[in-house]
Length: 191
Length: 395
Image (tube, rainbow over all chains, first blue to last red):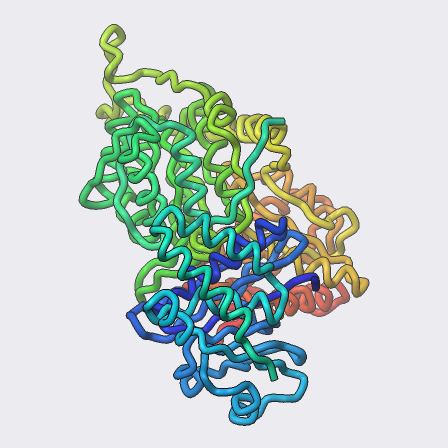
């Protein structure tokens, strides 16, 4: 794993980006990594575009500013493609993971991205509707993150999901979330 | 060393945990962003029976600190938390708490003051309270916020001190970010903070006393103030002693100031709070490029560590002081004024320049810190130093 992985999340308020960023942080801790996860706070309204940030590193993390040059950008809602500049500041060999039905190459062309950028697409909303029965794409997107970047381990994601959701939800909801992570891990396609 | 638990959670969450572990008798509080989750989580601990405290939901911060004063004078261990406008609304009670020598511990989520309205981090709120007679500790990280909170209790309650302590953490940056933190077990914290033995408690019916009396013309008001001055001066040794003891228990270093790469530093930044991390990161990068850069972080602002700061800066050519607060009409921000004062009697006085940064949560990008070090290198090689604060990164 590289020294420091910086992830920027784009979502609409209510889609669970903060929960996902937290899940990734917990997973990093389980792997004895250092981490930071911080939402960008503003006037929040359901459905408004929001950002969140996650840092993962094998070494203690000193910096406390926003992430300017992420290694990974995760987009929980493809309607944001017209609203925010998802590739802003992305490192030259960076990765963009999008919840969408559009294939990666089409996204890459539409955004005019350099060849060195990896685009990964997964229908996380479709998977969430199938498994969780609600359009909450956050947990499947963490499954896609595990597959595409290796920044987190899929098994660790699932065991933490079971542990943290276990305090709040019944087994059926936990199982649905675990299934959503597995399916996104399997179904994500990369440019 | 006792076993510690490593968790991934927010600064506010570990401050609430520290509150619970310190076992206060009374916590009167009023919620305000970004402090809210501290009192929210603490109230939950009370409801769950995980701490046996009286949680008093008051109608304002003025009432919160008033209730703290009353409960503390009665003989209770008292803790609270606030931020920004809330701290401002406590203004008169802050002086009453210190004047009555009440060992109240308060966490403050550092946040900008209105106007214009802004909920994000700066130090305008706490720096406005710097002359209220409270001991003031600052955290860079969630870990330090947790540690400072625990240390605050034995500092405040020390018979040589008996002063309120404010433990300050940066709003959102530290309060709301998830960070990796090591937590002590309840027994260790409980043994460390000890049982509170109040002095001059109103509820000690065998030894009746009165508090906050009239001390007008010809009365002992003047002498009371001198005794407060002597107490906060004495608190410096107590902060160091408690810090050393906690350091031994936790394995984490504590000093009134933290110095990093200062042994042979030619250019250095003095800073408070979370930005110290950004400065450390950039200074390490610059070291790799051959620049002799260093960092001095102030962890205890009141009492101010003048001698320690002067000693740390003794061999430096140019110093930048970063202030996340204004002192409008003064030559610079509060930390700048203190740093200049610390260096006045020094044998070799370095050039000292002031930057006001990050007001209202304005992001402290690494390139801004790098530009400060570039300015310092220029000054160290003969470029005249600027007077008056530079607004770092302002558009």
